[in-house]
Image (cartoon, rainbow, N blue to C red; front, side):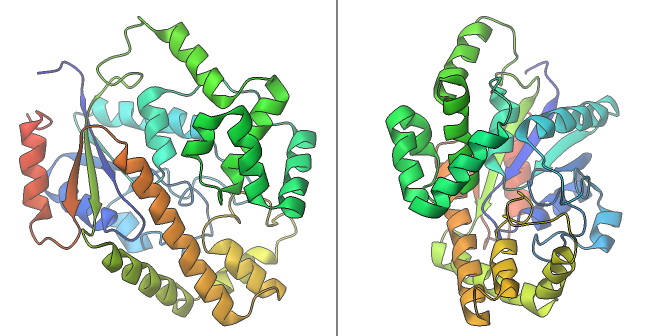
Length: 323
């Protein structure tokens, strides 16, 4: 058995039922929850992020929820700092960190560490954003494929934030993101980083999703409609009333928020907003599946199964997570 303390990753696409299973696990295991979600970090963004209700958060606290203002940015590097601190605190009390969410980059950063990338360059970024508006994201993806084919294969052509960041890194430093990561791996090779690379924990990786992809698509459409019924448009309207928020911010580029923002700007009618919001959410789920298909040692659960809790406990016992 590993001498490293245990941790559980509960991953999966949006609308797959991750939170429900995580809560069930906390009822039978000494687990404490850490959110792994790049949208749940923002305060005042509750409906469109499908944030657990205040009652649920009070009964089952999630770390790294509601920790920054929507005007701020939150990076994978900051997530690693915050998550590692939370994991250490949980472990010190004899509990198991249960990390739950769908931001796959955050999980990967925790496991493998992050290469030291050059800081953002406002001038280069503004130039790339102007290119994206004028020429389209497809052109940016083509440019990235020329200088960094590995990153281009990993980054979806419709993911502006990551496309722009990858090209920004290359233009600022003259090295691709892939080259930066390879350099870091070479520097860290031979170092004692534990059984999981850079993460000093024994990790059990779980993924939950409906076995039938059509079921997930139906869930996504239903949830987006429910968000609209719950006041999603008014939530975005309140954000738009602030002078410091705009569509260029990561918070407002979150799935759903950008489409409602454009609707309130008059660029989309209500049906277009709903359709594009659902499509964007399905594209997010597809990207999450792509990440998970390349994940080693992941144990899959079917969202529609009635015995996922017992299946999860059996698996955790088989990989020596439960003592």
